Length: 162
Image (cartoon, rainbow, N blue to C red; front, side, top):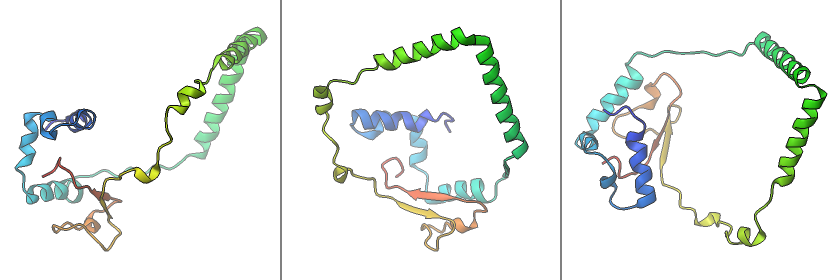
């Protein structure tokens, strides 16, 4: 199995931009997945999320570290101001003001050439969403409630999975 995230994303983006038959954008390696049955995918889900090894990482904010980081930032700014001096700070302010002053808006004629999008015409991809806390679960004997951590599944009808 390909490890690069470009394996799916690259061809998917190519298909979106250039259109055509979606298969033409995928390598022959993708055919490996086309013949897999439902049990194959159930096994992958079970081994990956239910029975496979896992690591749980709990992160707790540290108030002492927050205070330390704030103090470090105050010291850094103070040292920078001392290093630049009054003249350096004035020069940097002039550069900033000049950059802001040089910023120009495109002419109204250009902006008027782009019509406002009609949100009512946006076609959202139909999908069914499931998570481990819902009574409604996806079909095929998969019970997301068995997964021992937060889990969200979107069932998106797609030509990528047959």
